[in-house]
Length: 153
Image (cartoon, rainbow, N blue to C red):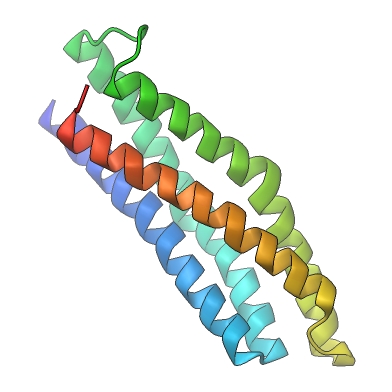
């Protein structure tokens, strides 16, 4: 069980650490306004999602399910575990359905900016949507982390 908990915590560090760090670097690049830096950062955010967020997600899901089964937790009824799972699914939907397509669009638009067009309003609009939905997709795992530690209900 300790190995599963360790895997779960490593997954949380990879997952939360990357989504928070990626947002930090993306915001810094946007504030600077340099098209080449924005483009490189947008590509690196996507790369980091595949290198860190996705493996963290897999570790969280696999180890979490295994721990829940071994601990004989009820998967029905409202509990900290059920609320965590609901928030986790919402986060996954936001990431897959909203954030990834926005990131692809920001990469495309920032590439156009590098080739001479400057940072467009379309990029800035997409970036603003990314910030809003990214914040939601980041706050939910922070709440989940609180639930996992405190088990409030």
